[in-house]
Length: 403
Ligand code: HGY
Ligand code: MN
Ligand code: MN
Image 1: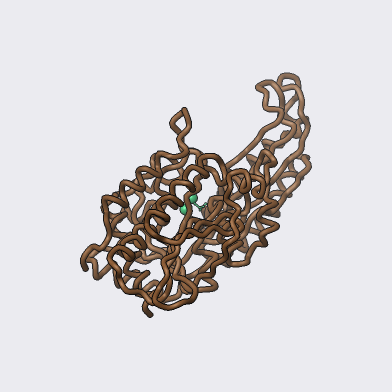
Image 2: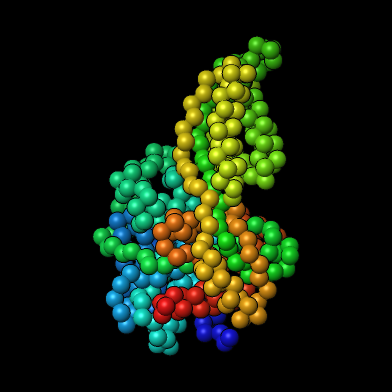
């Protein structure tokens, strides 16, 4: 199959977007609804208008570029996100949004026939690094989360998503629905690169549970307090981390404490309070349910053992999802037609596609993350494969738009 897209334009747009949100220390921070996110949004909206697409923005700040078809109806949407984790790479999310933009730009320029409307989407706060729950914008779009709840979400400094959305000027009024959903993304894991396979045909997405946990013990003098008289919340957190890491490893699940605050945080004071986040995931629903219950029990057991108080707040949950066989087959067929090596696989990373899968025909396409690195500046994918993944995205868009 011939290539349709302007690969140079796609690569240069990825590189340009990658320059946004870089701090003086050279680290990329484009957290949802931050100034960096606004800059990226402004750039994307400009490109959407340049491409001759209809720019739409909804009440939670999701951005759409719409290309009408020969018939009316809900669009086939190709989406992902442009917000990032702290100190991020330049591929996560951006590959899917800019490939969707390049696909629609090319379809419009070459007047490729499509009955159904097409849209590219950039979802608000996919990452959940600033506001919880993650996949916030797409969850409001499908109705899983109310707009009120989403706007009331607070970051660690207490700012609400609603105030930040207004501050950056992205509280819109447009409304759309999707008749099908596609997401092209970097794998963010080690398998495709290790096996030297070019395309991942995604069969489903992991489930996850997240909590905010606070252990309250007794701050005391680091030099005079004997170990057996301490109620050190960091000991409780460490016991929990070791117990749940082992439990997750046994079940091929993953357990992460990604954020921790130790107070008062002095070298010579036994901590009084420890606050930390938990991210627990499995692609198997039964395993996730079992480890979810085990984790809540362990959180309390470790508190009792060390004699500290505990506050445990669930902050996010998503069940594992599977994509429809016919959608998996579509991606696989186009990868084969393009002579690209490929294999079926689940996604250990969460994506906006997980909120669409239970509702509309949904598919995901992966390209390898070199060294399996992601959510870090070392995140890297081969631009030639990124362009081939974008071609498969375009193949799927056009087929779905004319079914
Ligand atoms: O956390 C995730 O899996 C996704 O990158 N937001
Ligand atoms: Mn992502
Ligand atoms: Mn991510």
